[in-house]
Length: 194
Image 1 (cartoon, rainbow, N blue to C red):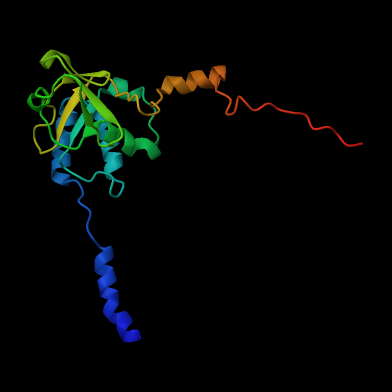
Image 2: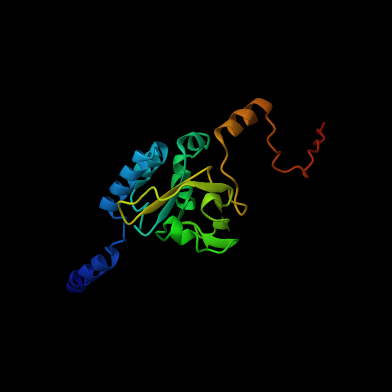
């Protein structure tokens, strides 16, 4: 019995140690250098945090859509939702602006989170929109296989709960206009037994 265990143990170990493709660190560092050169420092910080987490960025075949630092600072992203935020601001294929211009107006493209679709409004180079955001700084990342473009705002998605801006949290705490969880349930008083 022990002999079978010794013979089968290496087979189980090989099955468990399959390598997941992770992002090419050289390409990621080159892309982040390009981002810093064009003043997308906030997005670089988020990528560095996400990259420090195991298996968070899996593939170099990616295009990032980066809000500028001012817009990014207005979005409340928790550590638990950082990967969702970054992946929803990306598509799983590297595309320069010239490639994006070939998409017909109204095209839906899955983001890095397939359930979150990015709608392309193509009115040519000066008016290429992704959902609610205009591409205002195209082709930022050119030193690696990773592509990235600056956008005018954080992307909003109609098929999900929108990310709240930091100001929304302050306003909610002041006014306390939070919805009651079960408005149809009425409280009933319990008669006291005497």
